[in-house]
Amino acid sequence: MKYTNSTLFKTELQNISDVLELINYRPRTIDSYLQCIFECCSWLQDTYNISIADADILQLRAFLLHLKRRKEEGGLGYAPRSVNLYNCALKKYFRFVLKKPLSNEDLPLCRVDHPLPKVPSQKDVFRLILGMDNLKHMTELAAAYGAGLRISEVTALRFRDISFSDGTITISEESSKSRYAGTIELSTRLKGILYRYWKQCYPDARPDDWLFPGQKPGSHITKGSLDRVFKKRIRELGWESRGYSFHCLRHAQALHYYQSGADLFQVQQRLRHRTITSTLIYVQLDAKLKERRHIENPFDAENFS
Image 1 (tube, rainbow, N blue to C red):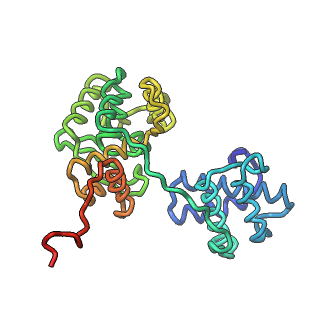
Image 2: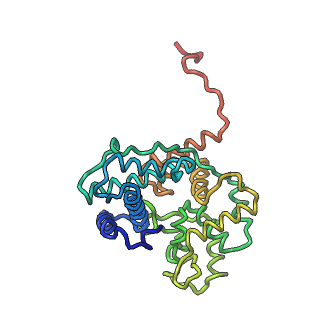
């Protein structure tokens, strides 16, 4: 059950909501944490008939194990990343609301695998995007790849964010996941697609209008709608087994940019990563895709003396 549809645990939720707002978490993150706390409170009440304030470490561990264990074992079968979200929400609640901090020794985090993302080749990206008949849908995917944008950043674009005179696209702090605003140079092809989209679809658009409006007046396209556009295109191409997600367009832009000669710092700036660590994945991807040649051990060099 969604916490917003219930009258239960209002005090507990309000207490942590105030703290998260003060920390300046994004509304979506606050919503996720509140849902985690709500589900924990419900489970503790149903299972032990206690409140979250009275729960001990073993009972909290039991809740996390219930989330993680497979459905055949009586659990919910949540992925490790999802279980860790609940873990973090509980630690925030106990630290800031109950003033009883929990450590990783108390509630260990699940180990999470970090597989390399599935990334289409440059040829396949061109086929995926440029072969679309619907201009609006093509422009949405072109913006994601051409500027290396997250799905949330594509949906939140306004016409004022596109400057044809400067040849740039601006990502605001509000729409950026990492609150890292930035200006990205428009490629010639993306600039042309955006210009054609503007002239053909919204020639009377005002600067504050959404670049990709939604069905409701005054709203922008939702992430769900944009994801469906991408998945439909993948089905049209018969690529369902390749494991591509919408985010693969951002990965593809970064990898192809790096393979074209950009250094890591340039890739970091284009993706607006706060740390270079997040950018290193493209070095791994490039290395995996390359045919590795044999390198002679320096100790065997002929001129070694």
